[in-house]
Structure formats: C-alpha cells, structure tokens
Image (cartoon, rainbow, N blue to C red; front, side, top):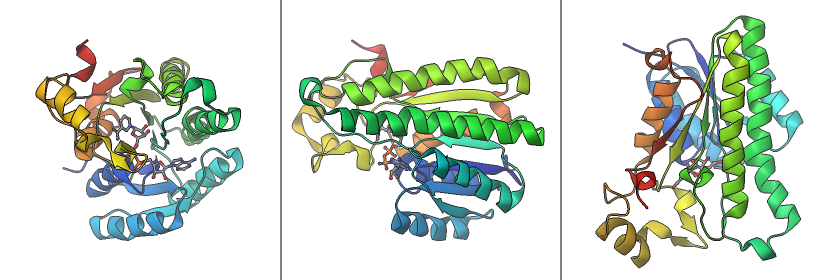
Length: 258
Ligand SMILES: NC(=O)c1ccc[n+]([C@@H]2O[C@H](COP(=O)([O-])OP(=O)(O)OC[C@H]3O[C@@H](n4cnc5c(N)ncnc54)[C@H](O)[C@@H]3O)[C@@H](O)[C@H]2O)c1
C-alpha cells in the first residue's frame, strides 16, 4: 500500500544525496514531489529520474537562503497540486574552517541556509497547510553535529543546534494546528557532503581506523542515503502520528559512545 498517494511533498536540496533518496522514496509511494534546489542541471536530472518513478514531480529552482525565493517555491507548489502536506528541510552546506579565521560573510551564509532557510520554509509551509486545513508534517534534516562539538565546524554545528531548537519550538507552536514537526540527526553518511576539500573523509585512514576498526561507530560503517530517507519518510507518515518534536539519530550508534 502506498503511504503518500496524492500528497504534495517539498524536499529542499532534493536533487542530490539524502534529499534525492528521500524524494525517490516519496515518489515511489505516490507523492507529488517538489524538488527545491539551487542547481538547474542537478535539478533537471533528478526530475527526469523522479518522473520515471511516479507521482507528478516538478523542480523549482530555489535558493532557500532568499526569503522571496522560498515564497515563490510555496506558490509554485500550491499552483501545481493545490495542496501542501509535507515539508522536508534538508538543504545544507558544509566546509571546514577554523573558528578564529572564519569570516562573517561565510558564517552568515551558513546560517542563512541551514537556519533561516528552514525557518522560512517551515513558516510558509505551515501557513499553507493551515489555510488548506491540512494536518501536515515537517521534517528537518539536522546532524549529530547539532549536539556534539567538532573541530573546524563551529558554523555548521551552531546552525544545526539552532535547527534542532527550531524543530522543538515549531513542534510546540504548530501542534494546535495538527502539524507535526520532527527531525533526523544523521552521523556519517556516504554523500557529496562527505567530500571535504576534495577528499572523501569516509575513505581516509583516520576514518577507517578510529570509526570503523576501533568501532567508534558501533556498527563500524558509514550509513547510506536510503537508511536516512526511510526514517524521514517514517516521520512524515501515519506510522508516526504520536511523535512530536523528536530528533532521531541515524548514526549507527555513533552518538551513544564517547
Ligand atoms: N552526508 C552526511 O554525512 C551528513 C551527516 C549529517 C547530516 N547531513 C545532512 O543531510 C542533509 C543532506 O546532505 P547530503 O549529505 O545529502 O549532501 P548534499 O550536498 O548531497 O545535499 C545538500 C543539498 O543542499 C543543496 N543546497 C545547499 N544550499 C542550498 C540553498 N541555499 N538552497 C537550496 N539548496 C541548497 C545542495 O545543492 C545539495 O543538493 C544536509 O542537511 C546535511 O547537513 C549529512
């Protein structure tokens, strides 16, 4: 049985990695997926693959760090199917930088995408759901970095920590409207985001020795995009109706160790 037949789902950063895997799972279960992503080439490629899976997908080129672009995204989604049921806030960027030499401009750019982008998407999505009388769901893709410290990542970790609080606070404020808000906190997942400075960190000796051989990750491996996407779709589905404001680690046990 298809869990999302006829529902409209927006996935930001939905053309690559975890977002694209999530978009494909929703499409396979009948959803009309709206991919919101910056890059046109990736967006069109993802759209073409989604069309072969199912639903009635569209791609809306969107930079979520721009409020007007997010409003356009919502308008396009509503024009497309007349409804909005699920908002997946997945887009993010990562790069390594020392706290002391980080620039204000780059720091703001990270917050504009991870925090402000999710804020605008959540706000305008919730407004649309309320207007249409839809008890929808919002799922925020955070990171275990949201509650753990890591060198050269203060921009990203602080932003993900803020996203976690956005998840809890919007879960509280949107509950009276029947809207559920939850999050996932992935650990090491094999995607483009694992490639830092041209090096895939999952293929480095330090990752293999510390995280795999010494089992810092209890499951001794990185996760796959589908292992995250399946939790995201669960949190958007009727199988999770009593989960509100939760942020579920999807990390092979990494965050339970020290
Ligand atoms: N890969 C991992 O190990 C890992 C671990 C923890 C959390 N995450 C989180 O998972 C999510 C997906 O990341 P991924 O690993 O699939 O990497 P990814 O780089 O494939 O996906 C990120 C997507 O976001 C898009 N994006 C970035 N800024 C944007 C903007 N301003 N507007 C619109 N789109 C924008 C990118 O173009 C890209 O398509 C992110 O939120 C990331 O923080 C990933």
